[in-house]
Length: 132
Length: 354
Image 1 (tube, helix red, strand yellow):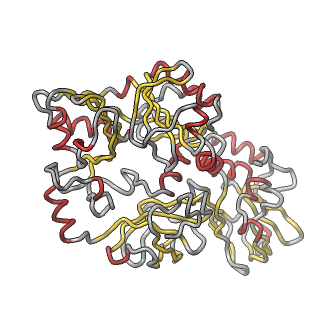
Image 2 (cartoon, chains in turn purple, blue):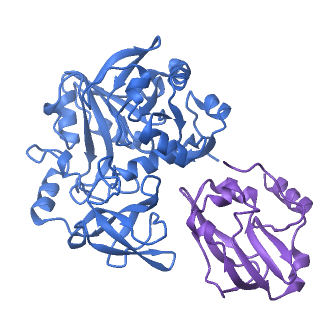
Image 3 (cartoon, each protein chain N blue to C red):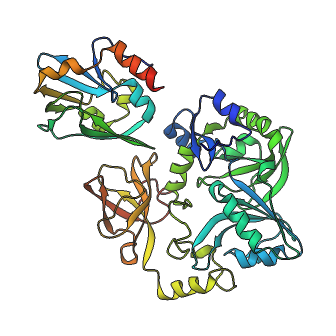
C-alpha cells in the first residue's frame, strides 16, 4: 500500500528530496514522499557500509525502481551507525512508510552547524511547488 | 520543441491516472497502478496495453510478395492469408532496420506492424524499393492497436482459442476489429487492430471485462523476461540477425537484402552473441553497462517474477553458453551474473535457470 502524501513537521528537508530526523547529535535519514512517488515501487537499495563517512550534499546510497535509479543525497555530514536492514531486504518498505519503517540510515553527525541549512516542511513544500 | 503525438486513448489514460512519458515521439502511459502489479496481472490474469503508437504499413499489388520477399528476412511463402510472421527488415550488412510482424491479408495484400520509432524509416525504405505493381502505404493513422495479454486474456474477452500467429476479422461486444494472436509478453493473448474512431469504445469493453490497464514499463519488463529483443536496445542497424540470435527468422535459402552477409556470418560463426543473464548478486543491470569479460548490457531491469536483476547483452561468443559467469559493472561495483538459457522466465521454470 502506497503511503499518502505528507511532510511531517518534526523533520528537516534537503532540496534533493531527503529528510533528516534529529535526535541528540544523531540523525536518521530517508527519502521524502515526493522522491519515492517519483521513482515508483523500489526494488533495490544500494546501502553504504556501516562506518562510512557521509558528506552533506553528496550521494551516499542509491535507490532503484524498475525503471530508474536515483542517488540518495546526504542532507548532513556524518558517520553511518546503522543501515536499515528491513529496507535492504524489502525496499518497497520505503513506499509503504517513507518516514517510519522506510528510514535508510542512522548517523552520528559530524558538523551540527549544517543543520540550519535544511528546510522546514513549509519551505520544502514551497520548493516542491516551484519544481512542479 | 517537438509536439508529442497522442493516441485515441489519451483521455482514458489521463482519466485512469497514468503517468505519461515521451516515447518515440508519442505521449504514452508508462504505468497506471505501478509496473510491478501490472506485470503480475499479465503473468497471472490479463492486462491491456495501448500500443497504438506502433506503425501500420500496407503493401499491395501483384508484386507485393516479390517486394517483401526481397526486403524481409523470413519467408512469406511459409504463411497464407490469415497468418502472420515475425520477420526482420534487413540492410546490406545483415543489420536490422526493424523487427516487425507481417500479416498476409490476401495473396496480394500484406500488413506490416512496425515499431513506432521506425515507422518513417521503414516506410521510406520500402518506398525506395517500390516496384511497379507493389504499392506501399502508411496507414498508421487509421488504426489503434490494443494488446490484451495474459493466461486469462482469451477467457476474459470471451474468445475461443486459436493458434499463435493467426488472425481474423471479429468483434468484441459489438466493436469490430481484427483479432491477431500475437503479443510481446510471452503470454497467450491477442492484439486487436481497430479503426481509430472505435478505439475508446473497445478499450472500455476490454477494461470492463477485467483486463488491467498496463503501461510501457510493464511491457518492457515482460518482454525482457522472455528475451524478446527490443529494437534500439538489443538489435539495430549495426547488429546482425545471427549475432542477435534471430537466425531462426532468416530464411537463408532465399535472397533478401543482406542475405549474403548473414550466410557468411553464420558460416564463420558470430564473434559475439546476445546472451541472457540473471544477477547472482544484488544490483540491477541497465543498458550501456560494461561486462567485465567483454561486451555490454543492451537491456537490463529488475525481474518482477524472479525478484532480481536480469538482462540481455552482447558478449564474446565463447561466453554466451548458459552457466557462464559474467561480471557486470554496476556504476563502479563489480557484481556477478550468470548466463541462462532463453527465455529467462517461463511458467515451467520459474527459477529462471536453464
